Image: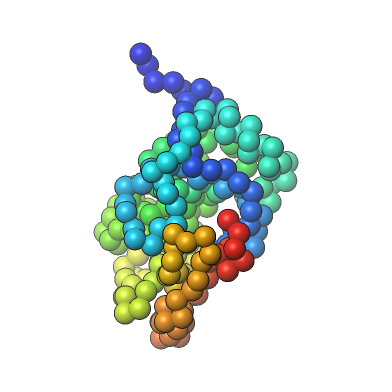
Length: 210
């Protein structure tokens, strides 16, 4: 049997919701998030149980997105594909059905992203060598940063419009998130000493929203 394609193709989805982008250059903008299941990394600080999810057809996903976000609001109709690691499921064929939206992706950098993606936010969990293999350019890098951790030199990374550090949150699996003061202090000092980088806080967690 041939695999299903088109609107009948199946994706495993953790959740679909309407909120604001809480981090990076698009902080504060309205967006619909499609959180896809599965990941090829197992970061201790991850705030998503990406091992669970519901099988949905592309049509079901599109119908739900349309109920939350109007395509005609372009370019203020941001659709963010996140995870888990969305590149494990998301393809250009799927994205053809979402062409009326401004398609963004949040990726760990381990795979190339589909060509129909219009905004790439990469929070790297791989080496600069792998990043160069997968990207010539991204819109933003957002590196999670904990105390005493070092980042690659910007000159060793693919070109980006924005380079962010994001201090790690403690208690990522709790319902109420709290910032680690020492991680914030370290991230601030890091930016002061390496001014090519900018600070990005996960404001959605500070506001206790998704």
